[in-house]
Figure 1 (cartoon, helix red, strand yellow):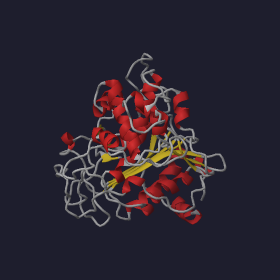
Figure 2 (cartoon, rainbow, N blue to C red):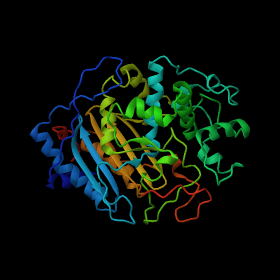
Figure 3 (cartoon, rainbow, N blue to C red):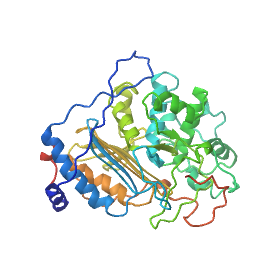
Length: 418
């Protein structure tokens, strides 16, 4: 790693750009959220990152068949931004800063913030039982908090539905997942609250809770409550009506990845967004306009400490708790050929966003290893794996049985390893 960083430090590259957001004072109850204008970086710091970041991402991703978007920012100021490849590998239209990618499990932090916002508004409690929202729910002792931190013990629908009696020619919705829990009662993984086990079912149910409390569909609620106020103009929760505008995905060998019958569930996935929109979201989280500091602190707290590890899970956010006190708040994701990496380095106020629609595991490790460009994050261990939902019911190139959805047309460097 030292040799790589020393090499890229010596390289010269083209300069980047800044992406700012206007400040505006609003009433405390206003839904108009404006991230603060980022402070200016010193010339020395900016030029340092202009040397090392393009060289790192070119060597790790851009020159290795990557198809997607990369954005890195510090204090909200963009240090590096690049779009490589085409919207559809079978065509020639290039990716742009307005191309929205499927975030896969990187959608989960958005769902979590929606729930925590409802907690802040006294519309629910983290200790509320699921029976409060789903009368007669067949799994006892599960709370909203257990859904958020994956300690519910609920089986993962991505695995149990393909093995159920569900007609694979029909799309599964969030309500269908709930009804199958009632009717088929697949075995739980463990007693609620006793340990951690990642399950997409948790976040499907959280989206249903948002709908029950708000009286709106989850896509509509997220648009009105967060995306529109934050001017995240290219961000949406996928529904079948979005088929014509949504990005297709591809396997590593350029094979088009077919949709399947699990395509319409949301909360756990199915949020489409751009790198620039995600940066707006990220910067809003550094204020209390979206969520209070106390609730954000609770989201970034580790909840699974049964086994000593630097890896842990908060309320919708993964984290690395390094032995030297460094902390990374992040969430990676994969669905079909989509890869997503969203990471925050709170000490340095750094944001790392990588979005792709041609599958490559390199996305995750490139994001992870880039932490050390900003501080001593000790990221020289074993490669990380993609998210659990990576195992899908349909392999690329095979004929699907589901009805086809319409095809989608530093001075900080002084502490960094070198």
